[in-house]
Length: 277
Image 1 (cartoon, rainbow, N blue to C red):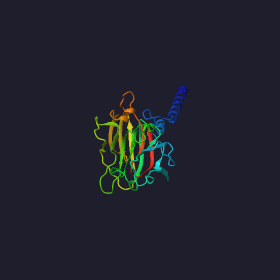
Image 2 (spheres, rainbow, N blue to C red; image 1 turned 135 degrees about the vertical axis):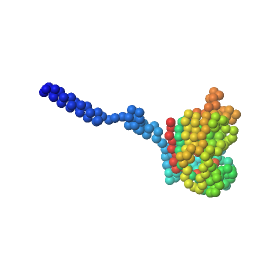
Image 3 (tube, rainbow, N blue to C red; image 1 turned 90 degrees about the vertical axis):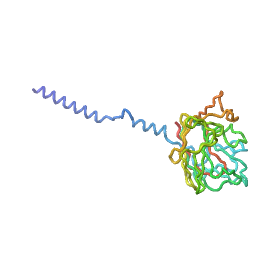
Image 4 (tube, one colour; image 1 turned 120 degrees about the horizontal axis):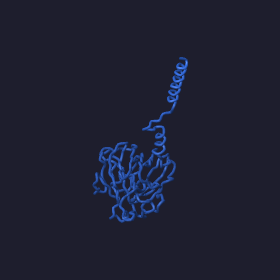
């Protein structure tokens, strides 16, 4: 009888030890593995600022009629943590001196987010379409291949429009130069395709524009709302400059350079962030 009681007590204590040990173990969700994946997501999916708020390090400019890197008229400038595009050094006539500010790195799959606002008056001598007009150019040709008198690079563009205070003037159109895309499997036939969801922003308010690019699919957003999507960019083989960017006759566009336009109206950027996939 004594030996049975002793054995029972030993088994009881052993049971409690096992239960305590298992309760003290650190459990990991076998599906989510949140303890590991959260840290990984923060590292791999975090936004990176590609504008340092102090200067134009990492960026280079190309203005029509001037060599790569020459910032004619101090067109692109930084003050008070804002990147500004201005034309006060151009004199009485813009004279078609459109420009491009290139980010230094070639990109393929990524999400780009910028905060911008239009300010001031359109430059003297600007074209009619230049009023509160600018844009993000992407899938662009390498900066060193842009010709001296080439006004805009071969690229796609998320077009910025600013309202005049009363009329609808939506932003977010896709404009193309030397590149085709597909809308629901059908190739575009016009230079600019308006956003599916029209949004107009008046005055000098800050606006958040985003482009998401992955596996040939491209989506435009404004203030977090999707406004346009398309896919499968290809070079136009009839465009002489685009033809020089093709490799062994392959028309597919697999990436390129991001840039901002200087094309008539003053504009500010206070955030430029990138998340590569």
